[in-house]
Image (cartoon, rainbow, N blue to C red; front, side, top):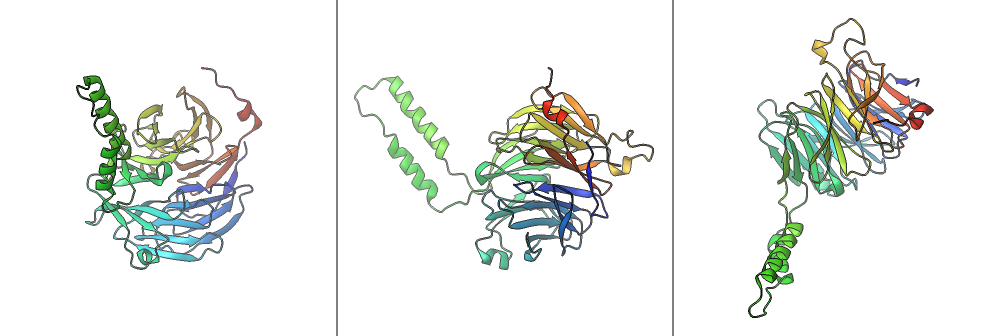
Length: 374
């Protein structure tokens, strides 16, 4: 498996991201440059110039028309993917740590760091409303009082976001816009649907059925307040570095400093599987075709020795999703792996490291013929 080496950054890679079709690969690093590459041959298509600090996050929308980036220069920027023109500049009080488009590409969200006396916020902008961009006024802003958000993604159907925190917590925040009067109207409608049985001497069984039906209806159609924490879990003991969804958005995998990656249900945040290593996990990605998960990590930069690449354990590690067992490793980076991503067709994966290189690995035929023996 000979990799394609992408050399377009002067500093360590912070995130890599494929577009939906997988023909383009976006890379950002601790330098101000945002690069886009052809994933098939590693040719650089172009750069997005404008940031003045480290770029922490990048995302492309559904049809790859727009690109979103968040930086330590206290800004989130929207770009035209094809021309590289900056379409919007959203200034913040602190560094932008995570960003993302919703499923339709109309709404963006980004989170800011808790630093310099400023609180951590998640902001939501509707790109269809130019006044929000012009006035730098999000339609919703969620404060995060406890520990700052270190990774965040949109949940299924764009109704919520899933955020990982510095303390290891996972929160699911409602991203729905609240409509005035909707709650009272829904309660009124819900009450009418299950009106009380008027049969004299109705049995207790009928009464219980009626109450259960009404309760289930109200739970199903309850109006969640904008920004409300819908679910909160704490399965990790240390900072969550990365969250990546499965292709169908039903599951997601987290990578944490506590030396584990974990699989969760996207809707309930129920913990499903754990993948254990002996070093901090910086990033984890799920294969779209197979029950495989790839983990990237290594020692923190300040703890890295200068002896050999094997000492720091800088391989990408492949685990079976169901059996939680490791079945393969890929060497290459001269330092910790900071970001990994599977190609949407599952035939290759990419990794970005502390060494500033991005490596695109196309799988050998043996990978597709491999059968895991439990």
